[in-house]
Length: 342
Length: 211
Image (cartoon, rainbow over all chains, first blue to last red; front, side, top):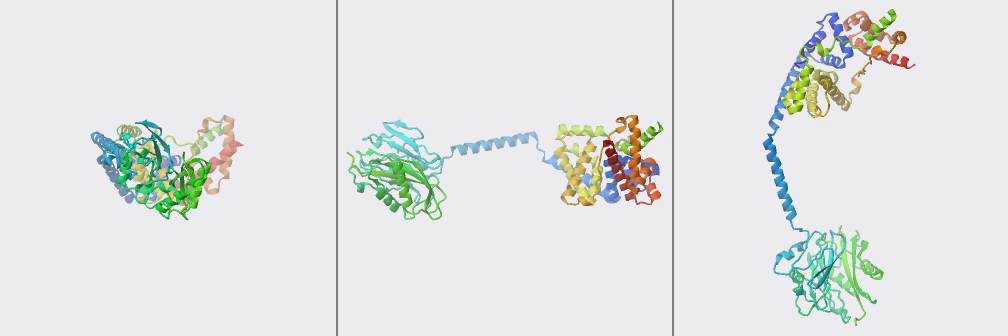
């Protein structure tokens, strides 16, 4: 405004017809070669003197106000440093809290913490360990974020008490292994019951004399499981058998279960998992449930042999319908041989 | 020889800017050095008050440019403030040699964008702001004579209003008002004839040069 005031007034005079012909021509000639000047002249032609002047006054005030706003908002350097330090402190505290937060995806994650006196079960990572004469090997069941079975193989007459070192690794993979004692003629298996969110001990073990009736299935409450995990199951002459706790971290109450109920389903499996062949072992399946409740996208997570795998799939397909779930369901079927062991 | 001098005279008058009449050089308070100083000071300190002071010195130019395109004083006022905001953002990102010219381009582009977004393009006459090359040194004597003939031919080809206005304005050095009096055209007609005539003349000259 201040810089170009003389020109503005000259243009104003030109527009008011106050200039002589030569001066007018001079300005016009200049405007013909200067688009800026031409635009200003035309802009002034479009407006009215009084109105334009009041607008320009407003603009001056607005700019002054705008400049002052920024001054108020401007932070002094020490304030900036303080703000930066606060941010770093908050980030650090948050980081520590997050880092130390126990992986609470599994409700059983605190099992070991609940009783320090109880020797915690051993949880294997990826590699086999030998500890106190007991060999542990971990077998990834599905994927890292679903479940992992850890099997512990004990000497024939090994006692659970041999497992002493409380070493429980509970991480997001929700893998946990428990060693429990069991009767010589039974193998126990602990699985997660999504209905009650408690591990369920299921036995598909083969009787030494081939008596299927001895195979048992029991549901345990948390205390029992703790005892089992701690290897406190009664029986001094028990030997350590395969025990695995399968935890699907994504399991929810009432989701991914057979519609006939776990009890009936397990009984169904029990009755059909006896083979005439010499082989025995476990097949782990993973599958999804379609809208009609049928298992689909079945895949073998851990197979035994072709026959066993096929049989496991047949059992799954021929079995009960499943309640609808978005998550992948993992099922472990243990086959027993009808051959009598020598 | 006379023909060449005449060509020089006519060609300069039509196509070359009148260097003795620099708008800013006439301005008593216009101070490009002062602009540069303030600009450097702002870039160094980041003090918005400095930029505000610099902008205020050109605020009237920005306002009238906006008023030329937007044709509304209230909208022009708002546009000026928006251009100031754009200035804050862009001033540090570009190399600015002459602040006033740079700000003019920024303002004009802002207004054209506003018009484009409001679909008012058809109501605004656009001139082509063409930089005419200094052809004085590009042609030899023979070429100059040839071009003079071409210029005359091209001038003859222009529509009557344009031809008359161009002759009166550039060759006879008549101001718009005198041309209005001489021809009976309206002032706006005269301005348009001169603008369009100049552009058509240049196109015609370019075509002939290519031949």
